[in-house]
Amino acid sequence: QSALTQPASVSGYPGQSITISCTGTSSDVGGYNYVSWHQQYPGRAPKLMIFDVTNRPSGVSSRFSGSKSGNTASLTISGLQAEDEAEYYCTSYTSSPTLVFGGGTKLTVL
Amino acid sequence: QLQLQESGPGLVKPSETLSLTCTVSGGSITTSDYYWGWIRQPPGKGLEWIGSIYYAAKTYSNPSLKSRISIFIDTSKNQFSLRLSSVTAADTAVYYCATLSRWLTYIESWGQGTLVTVSP
Image (cartoon, rainbow over all chains, first blue to last red; front, side, top):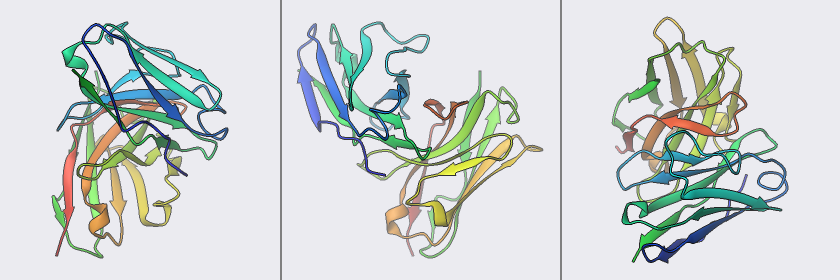
């Protein structure tokens, strides 16, 4: 199974919105509404931010939202804050069944 | 609230078997609500799903690792474990245990992770 494709880095100014893409195939992202997103600070364990494409776990800010079109899923963070600076990973259920990760995107808040 | 804690040797020699255990507290490992799983992250790199197990011992594994891994549950200790055989330096990573949704569709929560180094 091949890793999902994410941009290596994105950046934005406080208050702005940014979007991180996650591209797969019809065997993973495109075939199921089971894309999730995790946030990871350096030296820390990841944290679930979005599951099943659009759902937020309890306690996650509404500034985080997810969507999907075809084989590409997206994470949007609105009202960017300094604390959002982290690495973000997408994950998708696959037809095997297995889970596959994206390579990660480093978000820099300028 | 479930808590997960990894334990095991921090140093393993090449060609030997890496063994890690995840202790579950705050709930029963025999619950049907979750899969239990292992994910790893080489230093400075991204995340890789290793494999998962359900309370009924149903397991799924990353195809790239399947021939080398074993995941099993010890209900008497409320633990699940990972064994990875024939390790090389490429297996050096932080290993996380985690809970996954009951349909294996996403990772819900993570342990703090433990670094395992493969070195002579």
